[in-house]
Length: 317
Image 1 (cartoon, rainbow, N blue to C red):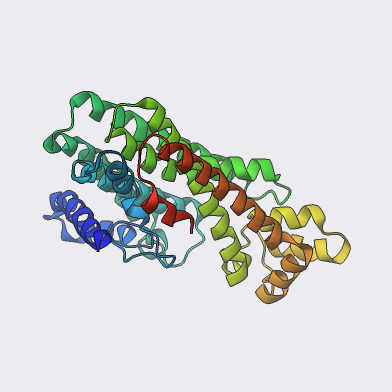
Image 2: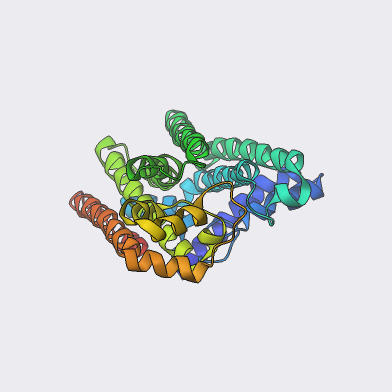
């Protein structure tokens, strides 16, 4: 029940941001689309049942017992993330359902830019919630820093995307900068708006990083087992590990399946079974559990500061 109420309030806050586009209904409709994708603020609860858009609110409430003053920041994070999604689709050009594929890169770029502007405006609404100017400045600086890290991660990803021989260390670095930094940002901001103890803010940021790493690597496993990442030639952690282990014909199969650009279409079932036989899925699962354990260790440290962590544990189940 608490999730439903928080989602309603977050959507109301996002609606306030979108209201400034009321005179351009077509643009407002386009801006709503990336916000309605899975794990974004206008979407239904994600398939894994975890309320990802509520993370900054859950962190804030865990520390200080309230969260409503953090709603503009939570909305801003959703707007920033949606902008990043649109820019990613333009740069990767690998989705026929993306805004850029359906309306062209110019329209998609304008939508992403609009989302960025709405995000910055949302942060300024913290003032209306009684948040001190000094804290708003810190929130603005932190959000921009984390999303600059995501931009740097995207640059590395684009630079390495055609390299089938990418190392595990390089891949994890990209994941940390591009994906985990967004979850880290949500936790950092939630903690920053709840208390002045920098030590606790830092621990929550570490929790967010490890949670984000675990979540992305879990997505890697799903992408392979469902076949979508195989069809899209995505060189994720299971594939990187498999390439270090495979020899002979098995390695040739993997190289053909994941080399970019590639005109060949691999049989997803065959490649998935090969990844299982090599032990890539098992290895990646262990890596996921490693980051989950780090996140649980962070929660234990947070609990020692007198903060409730029960709702946060649900993200690791």
